[in-house]
Length: 313
Image (cartoon, rainbow, N blue to C red):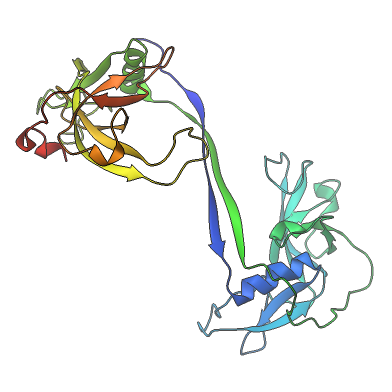
């Protein structure tokens, strides 16, 4: 059996969200080295603040400042910090109840080792030198043996408030396509498209998954399909992706290769985007050294009859 492929893969996208009045005040306060909580109807102070009481579901807007000092309520030692974490050296993740708050805030605690951390220890905020209105404006917590700090009584009125944030979501992992897709990828390097036929229903799946999604039985018989195919459905892309050097608008389509019973994805080129249509006959266009088609272009053949691909929509 040929070696099964594997490769590192990163899935990443920026998530943009707007802030309501409570979160806007909280993050703007961090930029100004002020920690704000919110007071519930029964007098509890919640930090970080929320817009609705988690017990009664009552809307709460009463902002109150708490101190930058507090007490560790529980903690766990992080021996090996990962990319993007607050500190590059080993540290503790700690829940800290700031003075004046009734709930705890999760953040990093900079300590020389796990023996230096204990529940009940006193800590204070170490502010980041450059602050933008994000939770990272708190660089971390650090041990503190001074007097309890007193808040100045800020009520959350700031100039130039933060109204939105961009949070980068990222997942790093090693992906292995398995036996079936390894064979599919290796065939593509020779400019061939290979699927697998189900021994029960006789359908040919491209790309193959190693099992029939309809019958649930293993597949192993390889079948070469294409290279030509038919556009079954498509969409017009109008938003440019930062990691793709393709000018918008362009068309991305489902393409049923000749001999296949499952449509695959591909970009359509060589034709104005507003002339792409269902039933359009296309063929792959390869670039030098590529392991997969760059795009598909019209073959010049008459459009396929709808009945020939309606089951693949």
